[in-house]
Length: 237
Image 1 (cartoon, one colour):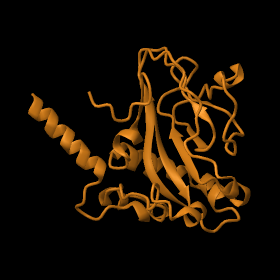
Image 2 (cartoon, rainbow, N blue to C red):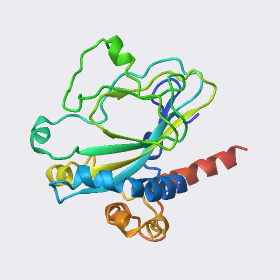
Image 3 (cartoon, rainbow, N blue to C red):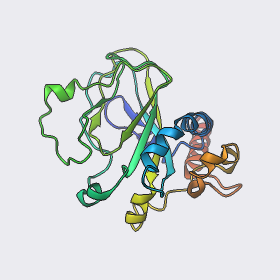
């Protein structure tokens, strides 16, 4: 009955529903604590190469597509393009790491993405056949898809009977945050990482999460929301 997070028939966004999923052990321990730790050399090349400002972890999220979802999701960008920033920035403003937790193929709702569109506001509509078929597959479970959130992308049908999950961790460039820190719609980053999970992270990742750590004993908005849902569900029985 709850419509939060719905992104079209059969498509749902963890981030839109919860705000952040870093209060969940699977995101905090597995994706952030282990997955991002393995990807640090790549992240350092993206965010620190010629740019000492680096990045910070911003949130956790992702999406899922239930089985027997027949429609394409329209191509879209997760963030508007600012050409002034794009001209001088060394790194993307936001980076999304999608962790592949099950094999992706042409049948189960793989992402489609149009390379080179991160600086484009409009890639032309109606969509071309090439854009509709630009599917990022096959991709094996255990892989990570690292993408500039400005790049135009969309969903594909999931013809199987199983739900396809694609969780994510998002990072923000400190270069971008310093330039657009006045934007109250995205800054400051909400504090969503429970202290107990932060304390388990290696020091190299703790440095990237300092801005989003919750004080000891304080629940995130997502945790509060889940408690309310649980209470409502219990009361309805």
